[in-house]
Image 1 (tube, rainbow, N blue to C red):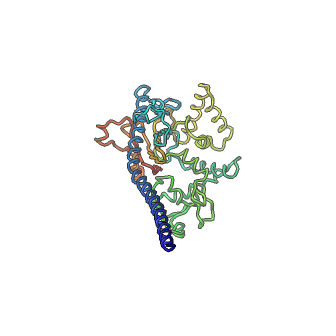
Image 2: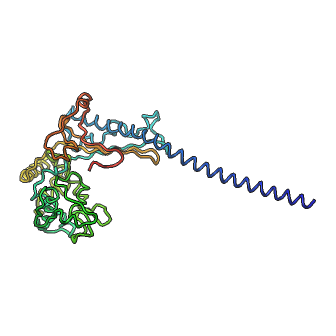
Image 3: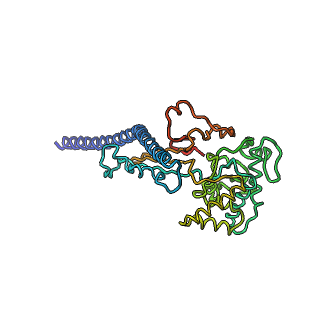
Amino acid sequence: MRSNKKKKGSILVFVLALIVFISILSIRLMKETTQELRHVSQFHKRDDLRTFAYSALDVAACVMNEYMMTLKTLENGQAWQQPLQFAELQNPNILLGFDGNENTAGALKWNVQLIDETGKIPFQKVKDKNLEALFAAMVNEEEGGGLFDEDDGRPFLDSLRDWEDEDDEERDEGAEDDFYEDLEPEYFTPGRRVSSFDEFGMIRGFGFSINDEREPGLFFNEDGTDTISFTKFKESISFYNEDAINPYTCSELVLRTLAGSDDALFEELLELRSSESKRDRDDFYNKVKGLASEMGLEITRSVNVIRAIVTVERGKSMFQIHAVFSTQRSGGTSQNNRQRNSPKKAKRSERNEKLAYPLRVLVLRENENLID
């Protein structure tokens, strides 16, 4: 009798243990299934967010086109710089049939940031003496400021020009193939104009190199991150703006380059630009116009090249578009032309002519900023 009770007890324990095991296994399978469903759903969400991202980009283009049709130009301080607010589409959920007041994890969020690329100096138009002064100003700022010697920029200019020219003659403070062949890994100078910001990381003096006695680099730290100088350089130089610069939206580094080593003039330009007086701002424009003319540059009050960053989010999913627009629908610079250093304007295709998109798209990238 006692033996039967022991057997029944053992069976009960076994059954309970089996139930616990199956429960744990079921929970584990449910978690894996949920993760798999989330992974698969990302592709659907990606396409969904992509549609909204391009819709937001079209809204921005239409708002800018409306201003150009009405005022014939885009200028800083106008409402086109906040296109979603101007179009009263701050909340994209109203496009899904919601009343716009939802605050759930599945709600959509989108944002359009428009940056005036016209406020940047065309890289291919900067004269050597001005580029040398620009590099010298960066070196001076990293060393604490004060009066600076423009010759401090000579090593960087020489290295840059040796990188771009097709000969093997090394400038006084530059570097040709003999220098880069001794690096690990070794590489060679391309013999063409620089076409992207990342390329500076390979040029002597700009990128950090354990093989170079001049370290750290002017543009890159040891861990590969951008230096403050490089961040300011990218805010001041453009590979897409080929014409005039807009002094009202340019960086302080651009004004410093225009003013050279004249600290008093630099401070005056900053003060005039920040003034709310029309007379002061006109005086600022005229002063900058004269300085830019000495550098072989032109200036404009119009915004002719615009960089757009569109971000759409839903929960933890995100989709982003980077694009550069030109208001010159029949002209502009394509990336291929830029790499071939062609001075000719890229022609618009027949399909794009028929589409009559209000702005010319110079370059467009999804989810990664590969523009620069």
